[in-house]
Length: 153
Image 1: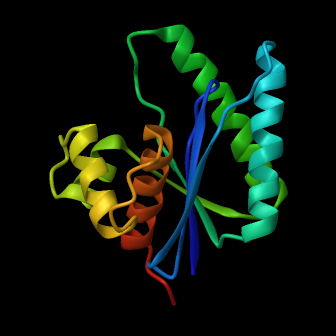
Image 2 (image 1 turned 180 degrees about the vertical axis):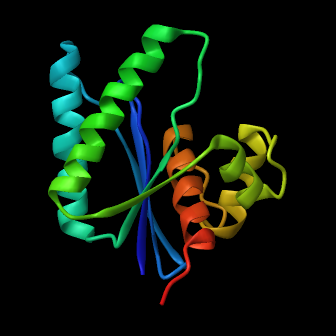
């Protein structure tokens, strides 16, 4: 079973793939484009390549949540829309979880800090590898949540 988590961001998008609950593949996509549309296109093309290579059964995303900066929320929502379109075009199932669901599943506390989520991911999935971006940690936590919540036949 391969589950991919995505932490969408226009400047940096984290991805994490958990294979059979044991192996983790992760990274951060950082577009070097200045144009907003080119950034979205670059991120989607990279995600498409990763999906084609690893062939996850499910892709999981964090649900969009209200931010004080409305412009940032709009940009992330537009990127999420492009990613959801990409998943639909490739017939890939997706699931979404709220930040509180992700924190609760990974740490047992729905109000856990990013530092607590990182610690748990390092101990369980990464086996103490610490050279990983916060975006990739978040993506792995999203994938981990899907792994724990999805009922497999």
